[in-house]
Length: 133
Image (cartoon, rainbow, N blue to C red; front, side):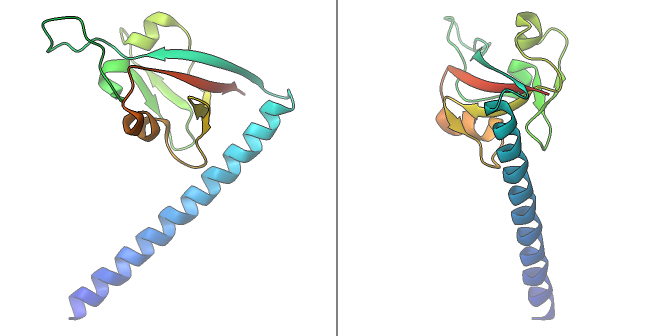
């Protein structure tokens, strides 16, 4: 029972830390959205399409989000951390390293990650609201 009490305590601590991280992320995003809405930060909409499914015999776009297929990696602040050379988005030049994703298909992220939202929506394409600090 000592181990289970310890495991429960550790799980609660991890949950509290994740909750605090999400609160900070939501506050940062709210501030950034306010800056973007006021015109202090460049804000633009970016059409984002998935790559084609390499396993399909007929051209069919992938659904959701895959860092491997898109060539985009996000950091904890929803900023584009990396664009993979040769990746789909690298060839389109619409996103830049440092761009912050504020919303996916008109839905503000509010502490969630863009990849999570896109994966939940399971669409072939998205409209991203992007802020360039």
